[in-house]
Image (cartoon, rainbow, N blue to C red; front, top):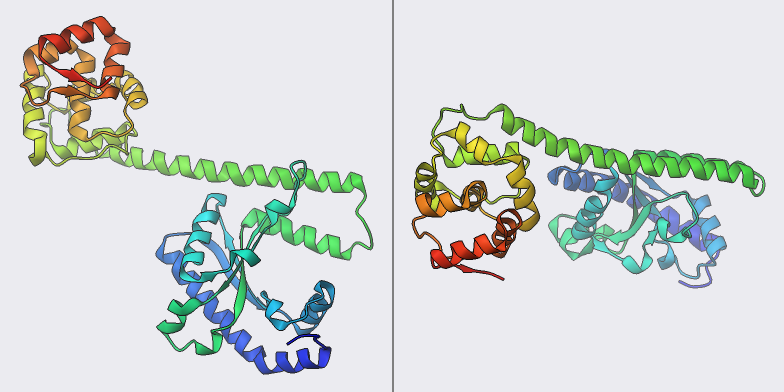
Amino acid sequence: MTDLNSEEITQWYAQYETVFDRFSHRLEQLIEQALGAENIEFDSVNSRVKTLTAILEKIERKSYRSLSELTDVVGIRVILFLESDIDKAANILTRIFQAHPEESVDKSDELSVDQIGYRSVHHICSLGEAQIALTEREEFENLKFEIQIRTILQHAWAEIEHDRNYKFPGDIPAEYRRRLNLIAGTLELIDREFSNVVGALEVFSKSQSAADTLPDKTDRITSRSVQQLLAARGKLDVVIVPKEIIGTKVETELLRFGVHNVGELQKLMSEEFFTHFGGNNDRSNSWGVLRSAMMYADLERYFSRAWQGGFRTLRRGTVKMLTQKYGREQVSDIVSQYGLHWAE
């Protein structure tokens, strides 16, 4: 349809208004289910259908020539608690729906580097073939909708700014615009810091939970106790290897080295060791960490008393860690004495 006129638009709206209403409520349900399934916490998911008056105003303002250009008759607003969840939510929703990025808008992109203001991501989507095929949703097949994703603070700012701008009969004086921008910038910093603090608290909580359930210091060493000690140190990225794979060999090495129980293992896995180990090893398994800890504690004692030929090559990160503590000459002597290889 081209060269739109108000009578045609009014007839079209009267025909589809109830469809839009059903569509908006169904989208609310789908989005709430999708976010809940991925453990994304949200404050609310709300929908709205543009009024006929708003549609007529937008068509005139934008000089639309076809109803297909109206992509936001149905709008969904997702209000999240954390800024860090915005991208996660967007990825989930653009995965379950058919996204139209060429028609979507990131309001942040509209601000220049020296501007602060309303920020929100507006995604234009449609149900897509997969969603249409799931249930009786054929009447929604060709309908597009807009999803706005914001935090609570972004939402508060957008509502205040939008409301005051539209009520003010002219340009806002520079003095007041500057003060509004300062508020917007403060809210943005608070949003970001709140996400950072919540993320740090989650890591801390996991560490504390592990520390609260640490085994008794007199207990023998097991895969479980190793996992608990690593978690208590905040080393949650270490791959936990079951004891039956290589654990028995390493447990024997620990005994020969002089580590007989959990308490002695705690001393071995010192903060000093992890400071050097963490900076030189991107990824390791739990038993490999223990071998590295023994070498770091006493390189000569490990190879003379504990090592039983279970490996012949020192990893690049381990070599760097040992060299930092013992010097290249001593490490080179050990490598030569025990017929080892090292990764340069």
